[in-house]
Image (cartoon, rainbow, N blue to C red; front, side, top):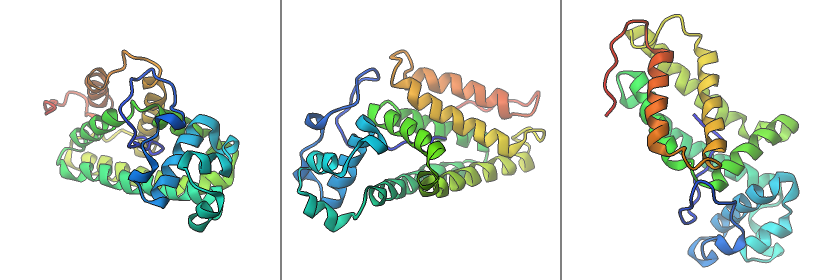
Length: 227
């Protein structure tokens, strides 16, 4: 769904709360140095953007000296690559839900349900929007996240093609276009959910499940009840 979303370990916030500042971050001593740097960078990138956040900003957020930070990451791009790898690991865990359901439409609902539980964090929303914007503007940023996008696309496409073969998915669906539409909706939901308090996970889940049935099921097919 949304391959640019990263759930942080910060305290839970309301949907409409602003991106947190340094005072909102967990105590630096609760994490190892690399993890501290990566989480500090997420907060800085969400607040200031990839371009606006400096290595000095990240040092201050992480509570460490520049010399110590450079022992672990030689550049801002290296930190972004580490964030992308964390995203990739989390994507793979989430996308495994598709293989756990015989009916891939139900698998998509389970994936969307998990996604809805994680998207209310304002850092997640800001990082999602920032990553998409920077990927469009800068080929080097796009290259860092391309693997994640391609792997997510392929996993969802495989599930939909399996659904076509088993009769769960309408065979007239253009699989590749359908996948990107679903991923685009995930990205858009992440941004809008952080700005609209009425977009609760429960309400989104109900409507998105209906949308998936209408969009993917063969015409006239019976719909299995969601768990």
